[in-house]
Image (cartoon, rainbow, N blue to C red):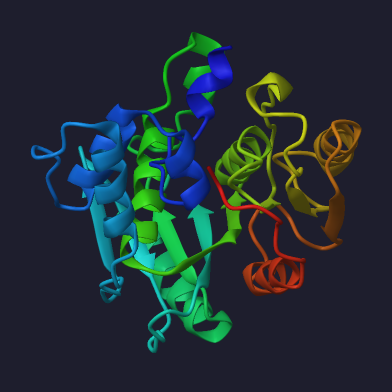
Length: 283
């Protein structure tokens, strides 16, 4: 499937994932944690080293960027983090035409929400002016943005105690389309998606086991949206999501257009954190 490139290639950072990981992936994990596997000749030794690293106390760094191959994500965390306390993780995806200024505004806005809601928030930036989802769909290209998002999740899980039953994606316009698409194609990782003014999404049910719990969707859309018409885009999209087994809560704002209402991020986070935690950890 051309959408297989939208699967998040996460490193095995849970006990369940370690048990099914290949020796190659275990070695990648060991290097990622800054250690070595050169003295491990058997898979059992590689596995033991990986378990030791996962059991170490997390470093809990302050807020800052994650950089990789020209891409950057801003990691925000509450001012006070209690060692050992697992925090939910929210991924926030910007809309098309992002600028340094718009991203900095977003970082400022979400740093307050991180402390207020006691969650870790990652604000990644697409390499180009928007996410590469459309080039995946139209040209069959691989998604470099998705590889980077997986790297961001891996880094945050390495450095902080993350409640992996509570990982969510929020996005605006093109970022909303990307947030839904990532969620429905990675149901074993993402618990919920909260898009505002999404124009479309892509879903390949064969990418995930049918036993995977479906992510919950808070589908926000302005009824006065002149870019993606509410009746022509939002209503059919919700029906499509429900038909594929997703629980969808409609969040309509009568006077809102395409732009995101100021209260939506806070309302969406509150809705997400009120959900029951998912039953299983990501693989």
